[in-house]
Structures are given as C-alpha cells and as structure tokens.
Length: 276
Image (tube, rainbow, N blue to C red; front, top):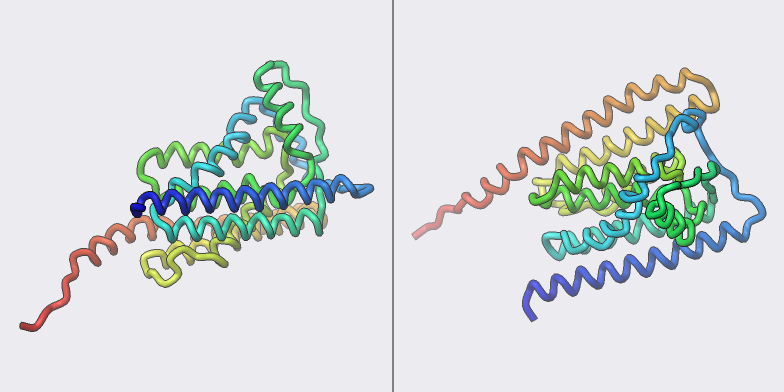
C-alpha cells in the first residue's frame, strides 16, 4: 500500500470516528434536553435586530460538507491527527455544556415562501433540534476547519468567505443566539491551545501566541456583553481592550504567515560544514 493510500485511509478513519462520536453525543444531548420539563434561553436585547435571511440556510447546511472535506484537505498525517483530536475534544466538551447548561433557541422562524428553501428548513427542523445551543458547534467547527484550509493555497479565499458565511448563518437562519457564537469561538481557541499543531516547531510559535490573544479577545467580548446585560452600558467599555487584544492576535498570526516561508526556505538552504 502506498503512502498516499495510507493517508487516505487515515483521513477516512478519522472522519468516520469524528462523525460517529458527533452523532452519538449530539443525539444524546438532544434526548436529554427533550426529557427536561423546562429548558431556558439566553439572549441579548440587540438580537431583536438580527434579520431572518432564508438564503443563509445554504451556507448553514454547507457546514456538513466542510465537515467531510476538511479531513481530506490535510497535508500530512500529523495534521489529520491534530484535526481529529481537536474535533473530538470540542464535540465532547460541547456535549458536557449541552447537558450541564441546556439552552434552546427562543425565536420562532418566519414562514419561508420559496419551496426549495422551505424544503431545506423542513429538513433542518427534522434533524436539528432547537437545543444543543451553547457553544455553537457550527462556529467551533468553522474555526477548526480554517486551521486546515488556511494552509491550502488553492481556493483559500473561497474557503475563508464560505466559512465566514457559515458563521453568520448561525444567526440569520435563527438557529443560534449570540452567546452561542461567542462560546463556540472560545471553545475553538481552547482546542488550539490544548491541542497545538507542531508544538515544538518555532515556525508556528507566533500562531500559538496568537491563539492566546484570540481566546482572551473572545472572552473580553463575552464579558462586555454580559456585563452590559446585567450591570449596564458601562460594560461595553470592555469592547475596546477586546478589540486591541484581537488585533494583537491578528498581528502575531500575520507574522507567522510572513515568516514561515522564509524560515522554511532558510532551513532548506542550510548545509552543515563537513570535514574532509
């Protein structure tokens, strides 16, 4: 069996394991939530301004396609392994939150006049319950998917735009509240820190540092909105340090993207002196 065949088998195996674990955890949590007498919701006041966009069902459901595709976009066995462990970690962690802090979506969906889109929403309502809200695994997965797709040169911009649309669609399909999006982003960056890629490779040092900043930034944004909800508008002042922290993380991430090719080229062109 060739190296390529072994890699494909590993990718297919990782996809199968993650799919089975996801289905088991998600369905158990749904069953648990439906067995409860009351499942609360958590919303911010400004969410009333979020529009319902029927077309966003397309990127929302495309999340399942990316779930399958991402494993076969991995460039080597190590990346497949890290991806699988991250996916399993966030699925199990999210499942614990679904059970410990069960939440449901609270806003009824408007009627969809388009037959095709209406059929898509009917399919969604059949297989995706209003429970299992926070963290949003669509958001968590989107960040994890990007950790792989960002290294794919071909179609990289298309992947980026598509994953952003997946993230936005969690709100505009009326499937998730904002707190779900924030907690999903936090969980994703926790997985990056707990399960790092090429931990001992200095080439990825800036990216590891960036993930700490991104995690802190999402926590600050969450704290700002929660403080504003319970204590008043003064809490929104936390948005400013949050933005600074996120921009710092972006700076470190861009440094990694700029320096990595240079470091790789430097390594490839170094030849130790040999004694005759």
